[in-house]
Image (cartoon, rainbow, N blue to C red; front, side, top):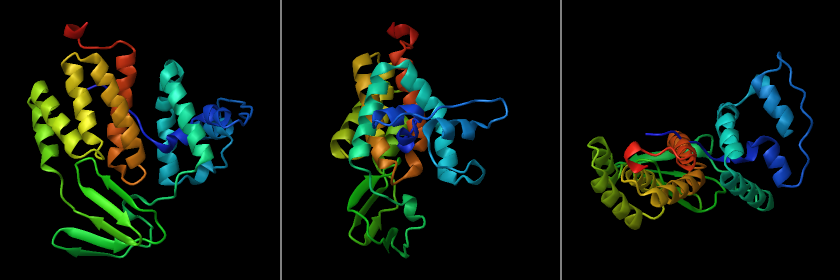
Length: 245
């Protein structure tokens, strides 16, 4: 498959982020001795100590080159990023906890279903990459702890290179689980191999949009997002299979 990228790194899109919300980007003086982190921090104006990065900060910094490359090479994608940044600056996203980490959660296990308490969180429902369903209502957290059978079916079709079967399976999953981004990923992949170019572009964009939102709750979409972004860049650059030219 081609290659793709991830979410709240939107907020770190260097000078692009600053200009999107009407703030001038600070001047940058690059030297051979200055670290990669220091250059990005200087350009973005973020108050970050590069010698004491959190895992999340290190991950975000590592993804910035791919995001910036795509934004600079594709005007449509850049405009989408700028629009998203303006939305975020107007209505900041809620602070959420991934996988219950450091959320003050106490969990219990009963018959494969995990439940716990999360303090002061907005209601939310989401699916992990493999279809495992989660919900949060008030102070109650719920997780099924099982993957959807549709996920395994789509993986099987992909492994067998049955693109028509994969397309049909993914379309059914999109209809059955509209809040689950994964079927859109497989659907775009099937469209790509079936030379359905417009559909492939539409579905990979839809996946990136949905998965970016879900990624604040589950890091299971980090790698698929990177792959999807690479796919989008390649498609927009006219890199299709030989028999699709």
